[in-house]
Length: 306
Image (cartoon, rainbow, N blue to C red; front, side):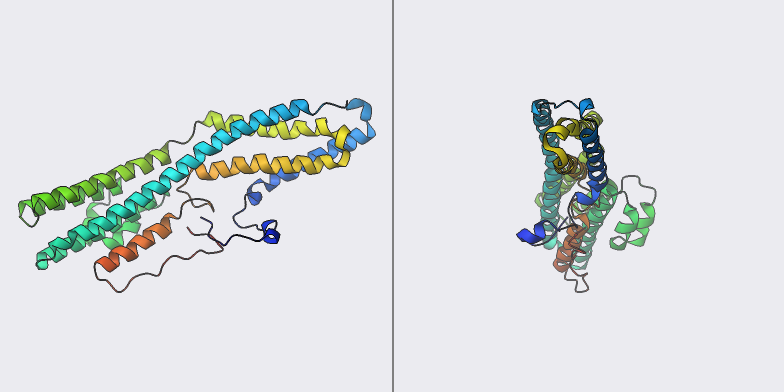
C-alpha cells in the first residue's frame, strides 16, 4: 500500500513510485510509436488514408469506458472486502485477548491465557503467509511451543488447524472447570468469527474475476488504441501520437490497476499491507500479555507499506 502525503500540483506529474505508469509504459510507448508511423504515412501517402470521422471511435470509446468501469468497480469491491475482513480479524483477536483476562486467577490460568493469545498471533501470521503463498508454518512457529510446531508440520491448512487446536484447548479447560459455560461460549464465538474471516479471505484469493472479462478488456483496449491513429491522422496530424498515448495511458492504466486490486493479498504497491497489520497485532497482543520485548511498528519503505 502506498503511504505518502498528498502531492503538490508540480509533484503530481513526476511521481513514479505508486504510479501505474511503470507497468504500462511499454504499451504506451508501442502505441505512440505506432501512431507516429501512421501519421507519417498519412502525411506522405494521404490517398491511402481517407479522412475518417471520429464519431465511431467516440462511440467505441464510450462503450469501452463503461465496461472498464464495471470491471474496476468489481476489482475494487474485492480489495475493499478484503480490507474489511482483516479489520474484523483485528477486532476479534483484540477482543479474545481481553476476554481471556478472566483466566488469570492462578498459574495454570495465566499459562493457558498466554498459549491462547500467542496461538492467535500464530493464526494471524499463518493466514497472511497462506494468502501470500509463503511458508505458513515457518512464520507461525515463533509463537507456538516446539512440540506443537512439530505436530503441525504436515498440516496443509495451518490457520484452520490452529483454530482447531484453540477449540481443543478451550474444551479441555471447560472440562477441567477452568472456564465457565458463558466464557466458553464467548470464546468459541471468537473462533467462529476468525474461521469466517479465513473463509472469506480464501474465497477472495481463490476465485478471481472470470477470465473472459480480462481477455475481452485486453483485446478491446489494444484494438481501440491501434485503430485510433487511422481516424485521427488526417484530421489532427502530428498531435495523433500524443492523443493516442494519453488515451492508452488511461485505458491501459485502469486495466493494470484493476489487475492489482483484483488480488488484494499480493505484494504489489497497491495491495493490502498484510505484514504491517500482522505486526500491529503482534505489538497489541504482546502488550496485552505484558511483554516488553516487542518489535517496532512497520514503516513504509520508499512510500510502500507491505
